[in-house]
Amino acid sequence: MKIISIYPGTFDPITNGHLDIIERAAEIFSEVIIAVAQNSTKNPLFTDEERLELIRASVKHLKNIRVDCFEGLLVAYAKKKKASVVVRGLRAVSDFEYEFQMALTNRKLAGKLTTVFLMPHEKYTYLSSSLVREIAQHGGDVSGFVPAIVLKKLKKKFKR
Image (cartoon, rainbow, N blue to C red; front, top):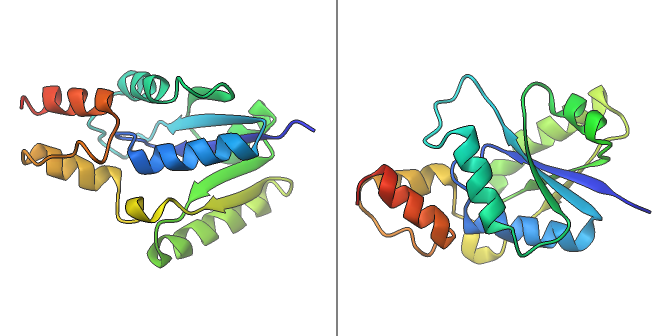
């Protein structure tokens, strides 16, 4: 039975923590769609196109991955893509309350959409895209936090 899953997020930028979740989701599900959320209320460092490019380069070693953008409700996008599972990463207890609320809301809106929570490797439990952006902006070393292509783009963005 083919199970299509969606891993949504802003991925600004994609981190090694995201990749850890993606690689494990790719082992569990027939297909994983990495869905870059287009959010007009946020002001991302990287454009949608740049984020798509960085993600595609970072997951090229995985065969059952698709990378796409979406805007609007995740449940509508999931229905359009015939996905039955939403993959979400839980780093810490602080993530749980928000993710639990979103999972229940998505279930209410689309009863057949199941949310599966994956915990990243413990070495990534503190890692977030916003933390990576802040460290990189101030000249800190983020080489252990992001794929090499992301590191190169961050240095270019911050002229370092």
